[in-house]
Image 1 (tube, helix red, strand yellow):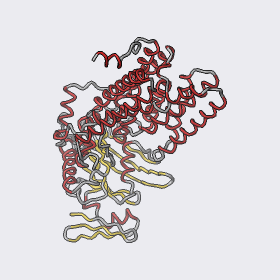
Image 2 (cartoon, helix red, strand yellow):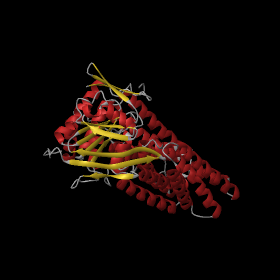
Image 3 (cartoon, one colour):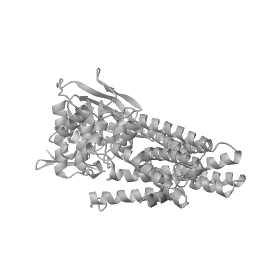
Image 4 (cartoon, one colour):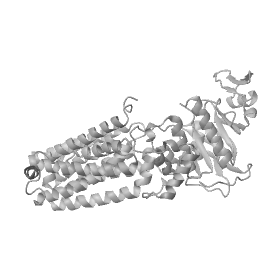
Length: 280
Length: 270
């Protein structure tokens, strides 16, 4: 037994400075992504949750080109793409505008990379994350963004929930569908800014949508689904960190696999709870 | 939800004066003069595209009329929850983590910032609203697994818990079986007559509502006629609304409205 534990938790897993940064930033990003992902799943806005982090990749590439701060570049591009999606999208063509904004941003990112002299590992880190290469300064930035987003979710919780589950009714009560769509997309931008350096532009999606989607199967009330989403996100990141440390394989891979596994369990749970659910 | 003292039935609660609405350059409603009284049940009927839903949206303030005004009676509170609304389409995802009681609770203060901490009083208020619409038995069910009729009851409870003066329902009977239609019509009748809430119910099918409605608001060609069912469903009234000759046929206690050009027929039990 001790032998197995020793294999699972080798020396340095909790004490090495780079691992400490990884634990802190990974946990923060898990909480942040789960909070925002909860609303993304409620609103059926998972494509947007997918597009904004990927579009923000151009900001990081741009920051690398001009020698600027990565978080700042990510923040600017995720905010621009989120606002672009919010204001250009009409009620009918939600998908197209999101796709166009995403394509434009990715194109810019490719241009920035070509103009600069970023070498392959940097690009690789932006796309797939580098959870074990996070600096102390990054950790502080990520914690700040997490605090900001958590506070915003606490303030927006009720009206955002209302307008997400029953938009017409909420609008009749003065909760503006458009205004809260903008606010929601800004939350997505905040969480993308923090998540991309840690889990990468491509895989931050799995942390935002996986836990929240799984939680919507397990949780019955909005509050329980929200807390479950946070719990599943945290457990996924922690498990992924341990596995990555043990095997030397990328953290992003394990985050994606573990969140997908939770989602699969959620589907199974829903099927056993109500076998007719999928047949209907 | 406390019991209300029923005010005088003739008290005007909502006044539409010369309302005109243009959408995309097209006149949808014109010269709408309608005064609604407290606690009356008004059916809004008319062919598709007549502007029924638009009228509700004008009252809700979603659409601003290009002429005329919507006035709420003096001393009448406006804003938060004063107008309850049951929208035409509400079809939640089967896996939405929202129980029936959660939806109704949003009616209390879903428009307020922050989050609510629950509490016994809140729970009791939700239980009472659920009981009033006879929905307590599925209070813990996810809304995505409920039938159309069950959802309509919840939406009514959700609106009533804010103690509105007016309740607007947009096609609440569409896609319901006959029995559920009767139950919803009975429920909104109680909302109007027991709670003193002015109810406007939009439907394209007169059949289920004629027996219960106090008045009918007939919309056609952008114009409106308001009166008792007997006053409204008459050849000269409907003919004026359509702008051409219309026949109203009474056959075996049923009414049949037949237009000359656009053949539009409504059958109803008189």
